[in-house]
Length: 100
Image (cartoon, rainbow, N blue to C red; front, side, top):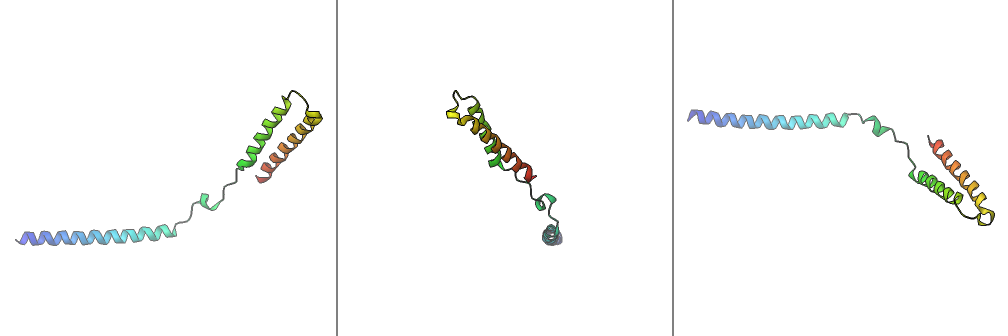
C-alpha cells in the first residue's frame, strides 16, 4: 500500500516537472526567436530580372530574322524595319545594363 502511494506521488511529480519544463522551454524559444536578427537575404532586395524586356528582345530578334528571310522588300520598308528593330534591341539591352 505504501509503495502505491509513493508511486502515484512520483508519477504526479514527474508530470508536473515535465509540464513546467515544456512551458519554460516554449517561452525561452519564443523570446529567443523574437530577438533573432533577420537573415541578410531578407534585408537586401534581389535585382529584378525583367522577364518582359527579355521576352521583347527575343521577339524582336525573331521578327528581324523573319524580315531578313522575307521574299520581297515590302515596298522598300524592310530595310528601315530591320534598322529600327536593331535600334530597339540595342535600347532594350541598354535598359537591362542600366538596371545593373
